[in-house]
Amino acid sequence: MTQFNYNSLFAERAPITTRGANRHATYDFAVAYPDPDTLPLTGLADALRVALEREGRDLAYYPVSAGYPPLRELVAEKLQRDRQMDVSPDDIILTSGSGEAINMLIQALTNPGDVLLTEEYVYLGTMRQMRLWGANVVGVKCDNEGIIPEALDETIRAQTAAGRRVKFLYTIPTFQNPLGWTMTLERRRRTLEVCASHGVPVMEDDCYVDLRFEGEDVTSMGSMDDSGQVLYVGSMSKIIAPGVRMGYMVAPERVRERALSFKSGGVNQFAALAINEYLRSEMYEHIDEENQALRVKRDAMLAALGEHFGNRATWSRPEGGLYVWLTMPQGTDLASFQEQSFREGVGYYNGTMFSPEGNGANMARLCFGHPTAETVSAGIAELANIFERNGIFSG
Image (tube, rainbow, N blue to C red):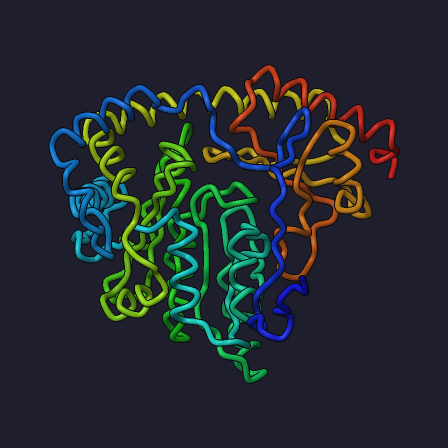
């Protein structure tokens, strides 16, 4: 039978995505999976049982588009306590992970050809979504304190002068993915001021903020804004598990109304019941346990890099999150070597995958969340061995 031909029917921006199994190297530092030993499986099961006994019959109804009201109330309380944000449950939309929240906001604000600003290296999933909807993604120069305000101002002016519309700045100011730094309070203030002077909103992705195991918290950009300039995105994935697919956005009503147009319905009520019930009694105890485990793994990675890489590279020392950013000497090509390293047993993502301009071939993101501390140490040692026998160190 002749197969129906769809070739002339696909949307212009519909990419081809293959359905392959996730690949894992022997030592997998590529993907930011959490520590499986700290997943609160028993607590979630117990919480779900309690919640279902109380209101399980309500699963017969479709959930409201903004999401389970008690969980939105909990998010509002958490944002007030932890991020100094005075928001109500009505300001919040629950989403299928923070990625859906980001995608909804991108679609609500972006026309093909618009410019979206990010840090000079940015989470590749967000960059992929931006480009899917036709945006020109432009990176802004950073240092260890975050976005450089003068570079931000210069970038906006240059894009405007070229006749391009800058729609928003996307930033991960706390434990930035992939660079690992936390933007200072002064840089957050100046970033908001620069963007406000050009009429540019800021999308603050705060999905890693709970994963602090060292240093002092820096207040959210959302808490520094009373004009509606900041669009705030958060996630339950990092404090419970990515598999629960639960995130949220905080945005002005006029933005929420547009963003909801790109959502197919409310979030999974089954997951929302379990998450709400569990976090109301166990949230901060669980976060502390998770962060203690992450600190041990980060320390293992830093120690192993010091032992096996020495003065042949530099790397970040994050106070939280899941990533170490490795920088090799200029001219080192970790991009073309990435697949070879994977085949020899160590997975990483090279810097060009995070750069809007394709820079960073001599850089790599190393994730320490999932492996044990012992595996982290052994994997970094093996990465050094792989580099040694393939001439990467001498290159």
